[in-house]
Image (cartoon, rainbow, N blue to C red; front, side, top):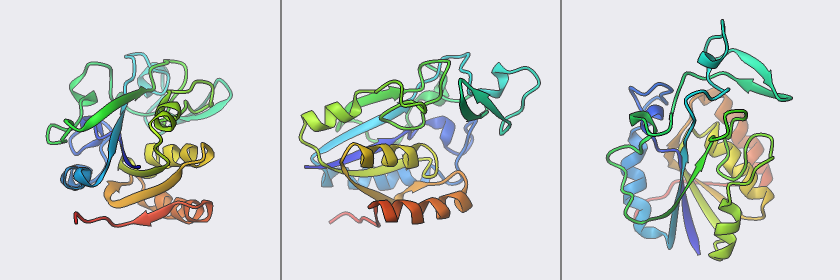
Length: 201
């Protein structure tokens, strides 16, 4: 069963959002157009409490992009983003969500960040996404969404570890840092990720 995983297509990652990905809104029409090609569509949503420790504002004297150690893990500090219930945490208004069967929220524990849709960054807590997909007999996953080099990247890494076949729809994702993304692509290719440009049949 071919499954689309839409990662974090939320307002704060779109132009004008607090952690905007350049031209991030351009992927929304692509995602909408491709949805009919899939048997199952699942989405993830960054859903942070207001005092999340990944926010620079939670640490006195710290600025976005500073790095700290948080419970033994390297943590980039971000601007406040995707705060639970906020406008920025909502999916982009044009995103078609009627066919999304399940939404998995992540980043809810204030003590640890969660880039991947499957686990937090310390692999301490499981979101339930892997079990859900296996229960639906979804073995082949097509990823899209934001940002290609962060939440999409870490979600694909975990999907590979969980034994799924992984594809990235390149025309339906954008990176925060294009230079970093180019390095990651080589690594992901070697691990078995297929990079595709997908057009509606």
